[in-house]
Length: 439
Image (cartoon, rainbow, N blue to C red; front, side, top):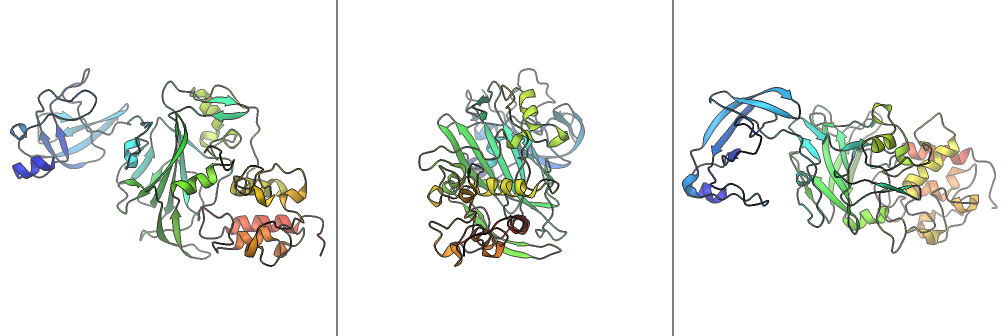
């Protein structure tokens, strides 16, 4: 198109049609637009059309017909496509607003998030493909008060299998997690509760990043995509990225640097068996999906009903750390499991600490009660024990949660500011814990 523009002096149009008719389509069913407005349109006769499956047009300058502009209006939606009328012309067009099928890439790493076809993006809305399932684990990680929209897609003909009580996803599975902040009337990020919306209104929210976890033949791979300022596209950033956030709230404001993890940092959490374990999901697992979400339906049921999971797991819905009606001990352990358990487990990256926070402990000392640190260094804050029952102010665990210093803070990744609600929960848990430790 750039070459044609240079040779013809005509601007690059919004829509190019080569005149090719698809089988089963009428002349008024070629293109589709998402909203009312004006487009520039070129009828480009490409001769033999497309070359096999490569979508490369055979074009010459001679068949580049004059540049035209047409206003259009979007008419009533019909099934899975929109019909649009060209007002000043004697024909109508259907312009690309159908819900495209997500795409799986076995080896290529697309630079643009849109190449995966996981979302429908307009100037007002960011909506997951109807072929995906929007999900929310029973327990969610804290990420600097960012909101999160999670999706799961499995290709047609593929099915996850239940293996030893856990979901084994097939090659082709794509998990996404989009991080965003609500905004005020000036477009500044504001802190609000995240109730798990199934789409994002771009007039009242700002997209920050979208992370993909893709199941390929040889295992899971992670891809961080960062949204541009115009909110029109997210681009692959394998080295990670950072952005300044001035987060406002009625209680207090937070001015911090938001970090997008690089690929290795993604593995730091998603590889729970070190050093040679494989990457795997943390939220889209049997226990976390046993809770209800949209339409109060079990998320496991949604997978089985769609044919994406071969059977129901024998697992009950876990306690959520946000459930204030639940037992404080169960809430605290649920919080520590989802935030710390990927490293603090018998085979995790923090196994040398002998501190188990994934719920696998047999003795309270293994969970940190009256346990002296093995390798905390300066992160111990001159304290003796990880957890001192009845005394949160003398507990290393809480001290590290309250820190935002890189060599002290826990978790090490995934946050720049402290999580007040999490700290309040763990502080209360320790304060109400019976017992004491030797001086």
